[in-house]
Amino acid sequence: MFYLLYNLFLVLMSPLLLGYLVWRIAVRGKSREGWSHRLGRLPASPQGRRVIWVHAVSVGEVIAAVPLLQALREAFPDYYLLLTTLTPTGNATARQQMGKLVDAVGYLPVDFPFAVRRAMRRVRPEALILMETELWPNLLMIARQQGVRTFIANGRLSDRSLPTYRRFRPFFHRILRCVDAICTQSEEDARRFCAIGAPPDRVHVTGNTKFDQAAVGAQDVDAEALRRDLGLPPGAPVLVIGSSRAPEEEQLIATVYRKLREHFPNLCIVWAPRHVERAEAVAEVLQQNGFCPWLRTQGTPPEPREQIVLDTFGELGKVYAVGDVAIIGGSFVPLGGQNLLQPLAHGKLVIHGPYMQNFRDVAEMARQAGVAWTARDEGELVEQVSRLLQDVRLREEVARRAQQLITEQQGASQRTVEMVRMILSPD
Image (cartoon, rainbow, N blue to C red):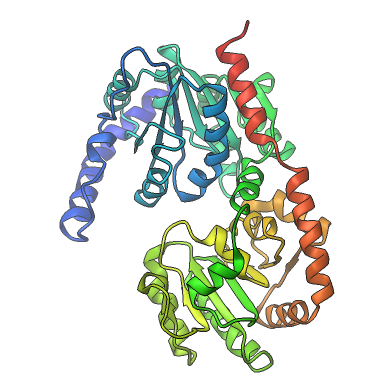
C-alpha cells in the first residue's frame, strides 16, 4: 500500500518537477547536463564485464567513497565500476576519479519505475552500493526484483531525519528488507536503522570510511609548497575556515577574524565555503570588515596575501595542512556541522560550534581525545582561537593525538568490501 502511494505521489508531482526543470534551465540558466542519465540513459556497461554500481549523492559522499572505491578496485580488479551522483558538484568531483578508480561517472536516475528499469537494463549491475542514507524505494525494490545484491555503505541516520523515518516505519521496513547488508558508521547508527525497520541480522557496524579518506588525503601534502602556491606570507599563523554554509555564520566568523587581528596582526585566513557559489559572498563579507581577499581562481597572487577565499573544487582537504587552527563551518548555525576529520588527519587543532549533530560520533571522539573544542558564540570563538594560537606545545601534542585517533579508526572501507565479497561469493 505504501509503495503504491509513493508511486502515485511521484506521478502527481511530475508536472511540478518538469516545471522546476524548465525554470532552472530557462530562468536560472542551469545546465541540461545529466538529464538523459536522470531518465535512465546511463552509460551502457561493456558486454562480458561484471559491474558494481556505487552511488554517492554529493561532494562529501563522493569523497567518503574514494577509499571504498580503492578497496573495491583492489578486491574486484576485473569488475566495471560505475559511480553516480545526484548533484552537479558531486559529479564534478566524481569525474576527477575517472580513469583512476572508476570506469564511468553518471547521474542517478529519478526514482520513477521506468527510469530505474531503463538504467538497470543499461548498467546490468551485480551489486549496487549506496553511500550513507540514499533510500530510493523504486531503485532498491527493482534492484531486488532483478537479483542485484544491494548494500548501504557508511550508513548513518541524522537526528533531523530519524523522526521522519520512524513515522513511516512500515514503509521503510519494506524498503530495507531489499538491502542485503547495511554497513553503519557507529553502534548508534546501527540502532537507528533497526528502529526504522531494518532486519537486525543485516545491520553491521563497520566504521566510518571518512577516517580512511582523511588518512589518504593527508599523505604527501607539501605544506610549504602549498603556502607559496596560495600566496601566504612566510611564517604567518593561518586560520582555515572549512565549509561555512550561511550568511549569519560567515558574518560571525569575519567579525571574529577582525577581532583576532587586533592581537595577532599578521594572522592569515584561508576560507572555503561549503558551496563554491558562496565564494563571492564570503569575499564580500571580508571586504565589509576591512580586508582585501584574493580568490583562488585568480591563481597565485603576485604579492603575499593574508585573506584567501577558495572558489575551487576539492582543495580544502589538503589546504588544512597550511593552517594552525581550523574552524568547522555549518556548526555555528543549526545545520548539523561538517566533517572535521580532514584537519585532524593533518594534525591541526579544531574548533566547531554547538551544532555538530550530523557528525556527533566523530565530534565526541575528537572531544574525548582532546583534539577538538566547542565555541558556543563569537566571544568563546575569539577566546578559544587566541588560546590555541599562543600554545605551541599544545599544538604539537594535538598533532600527535589527532593522527593517532585517525589511525585507530581506519579500516571501514576494507570491512565493507569484505561484506560485499562475502555476499557476492558466499562460497
